Length: 598
Image (cartoon, rainbow, N blue to C red):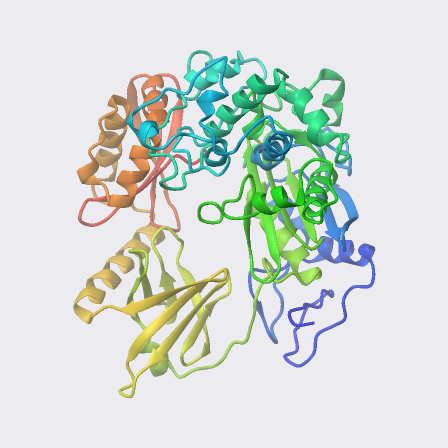
């Protein structure tokens, strides 16, 4: 057992011995309940582990459903917690919204239609569309939009995600969604990046694909999905019906906000069925994963083995046709999802292992990762499990020579600085991480899978470095002291702002200026970093109508400076209050923009 962990009441890892694999599914379940694995395990130290129930309480997650696949079958499926404040316990049969995990399930139906000759992956979708046409422009003239591009988020289509519709709100038709007309709460789905040129996540693209499928088959999507995918895979409790039929609503895990309060009115309705509309259980999603594994072995009635291999072959970055794919010698496919009040995650290897975690809270995003990490440890997966590190006591002078600024390969800068007598790493967009020495040339974080290695020359100076985060390694070239000094000093000032909760100079005015620009549809890109300017250009199609639709801009109230040094403002508009998050560099440039939940 190369990377195993002993889950006992007090976990102490000896460097020379590891315990045997748990002997039964019940023992694995018990260990999962008692001790969730930390991000990093340090040999010879207490684990710092927390029980599942404790983490559910801390993250305001009332209920969790889990299913685990082992050796080509569902080894166990179980619910933990409750469906709501006054609801029954979560069981293996409790329904959750799968959110964006709907996408790879829908993609399986599209690939079935390809295999039976009703669709082709590389044909212009306007040749199939009858009820509606995707507007053409100079971008689509150069490269047509195809199903392959739509299903791999490379078609250049707008609208990243969907908020759904509260229980009493008017719900648009698919045609209204596609054109962004009332009562749709998202913008029109259009092409504003050359198709095939780059990856950009687009739930909107899946809705175009949904219209293609419905026009070609002349069948409502819930019925089509039931006959082509759900029933053949034995996903008998699952449905793409939106809203969920009344007679099934008593079996639902009710959605909750990040603070644990119930979502008013219950589950939102998602007419965007292909992108976010699946109601299911962890067991049924595990059956989907087993169905893909069976297809790879040539044992599927839905798609051929060749089509299954095509499905799990990256088209752009790590994106397959539906799921994302990864892994080394053992390949896996995965997708996560987030609807209003729901967070979920599916991971499955092609060799018959995997797991599904579903939660009924916006706080479930963090928890589902912790649960999956623990399952990976218990079942000895080569990915997702926490690394095992060994801490060392190193002379302070040897550590001081590692302080500096390092250029990463993707225009980011890694800072290693001293704070309160210990080393800390800073990477833009991430919270600072305290570092522990593994040797005089290697540092690791305890709160994240980060390992920094240094090469020291004959003069005792860092000649080069590497930055490894969750398996991804990047070269880190030392910057000269004249450049490193100001960067380190600026990081110290940001850390002080976080400590004292003081917004950046001019932050309020910059926030107001930005919101006015977004509402007008004319952002000042010169005030932004190139990365943020690209982000705003990509998302302006939905940000502009959303911000403008909030009405007149009122007062701004400071909320907090988060761990990354971003200023958060609560912004009152005529019709609603939102939270804006911005990061302003000392030269006045905007290097981060977001709209986190309040």
